[in-house]
Length: 76
Image 1 (cartoon, rainbow, N blue to C red):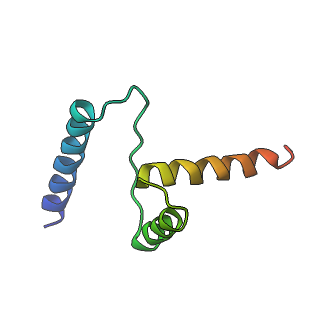
Image 2 (cartoon, rainbow, N blue to C red):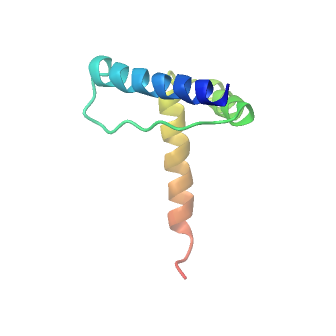
């Protein structure tokens, strides 16, 4: 059963990669990551509260905000 789940996950990743390559009209790098249910809910809350059109844009904005805060910290 465990091997079947891994096989299904690999097939899903392959499908996403093919779909992204053929149907996502962008030259920008594509990032894929896993998120638990709670994190996904927090991202969706941020998205809807800020009236952001896509989940990808919401994640991009959150990463940008996080990196700006990180860069403000003094380097040791």
